[in-house]
Length: 421
Image 1 (cartoon, helix red, strand yellow):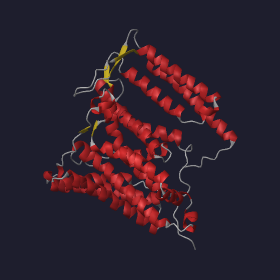
Image 2 (cartoon, rainbow, N blue to C red):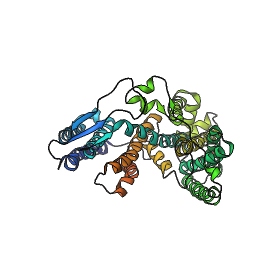
Image 3 (cartoon, helix red, strand yellow):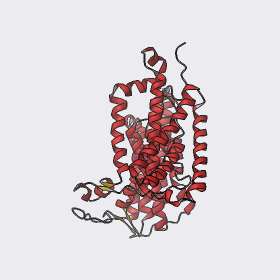
Image 4 (cartoon, rainbow, N blue to C red):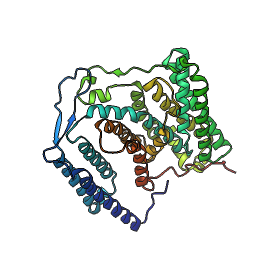
């Protein structure tokens, strides 16, 4: 959360350092993945969907492993060299995204050498894994655009997950569980708002207190009540919604148009939040409150009210993210089942530069790394399982290490506002 104002010398140094790291990545892609591949080895990428009848069959993609990885390595090297000498490329994040994509592609080809992988299934599970992270990123985005740091997303997700299962199991209604989970997340966010806005408690401290409280109370309820009352932990899940015709399209059909309702809610929120924040008066005022609350107050905007609304809305979306883990996937609650997704959502928000579509790209990256580790364990890739389980969190650290300082947080983010004297 550092200002993006850089002197020309620092900017040039950063461009050269980034170009150096891209070139180094290209070399590592060759050294780690291309070497020791036997001649004639091929990687088979299965493009057919599992189940259903597609409109037409797409043949599998069979690629020579060594040659393909060498080509990808060469492209990464060319991107790095171009990054040093093409100013427009150096100012764009597209080069970083391209390098990430090419490196992941080389890794997949190396992992599937002499074997096959269903890419359609991999991408479909990537979407499933990305949805709660994306919703968590949306939660943090709304809060921080109004100037309030909300690191309590993890606790709000966990509480929403528990409440949704218990209410849905007790009432027999999945919709009631969904609403209850969102309300639970909103109530915890309201507590955070009162502490950080009214009483001006340090926002990070307030967030961590809520996370610790949520982890403790949900674990207590799970052990003390759900184990003895199993009927309160059997909620069921929302069925997949198959859109007519387009769900039968090869590759994209099962990935995007035969998914759980939470994907469609996340996509709707993506466009809704982008429109609200950047196309409406409410969004303009919310962003002004997060950038310059003194100026907003001078114009007659109620700074505290806008922050309260933004934080509670963010909490409800975080609760929805928790519901997607239970009613959208397993239909039951397990202790600490969020597994850090709230924090990963915050990382996605930062990587996305506090913008909905940027958060989408980062969430897909984290979802892909989480899905890939389970696929690689099936392929018996010679990587210790402990390292595979670390993949999503390593990706988070790499992204933050490479991006923090290159993006700009709202100017008043985390700064309490007392009002005009």
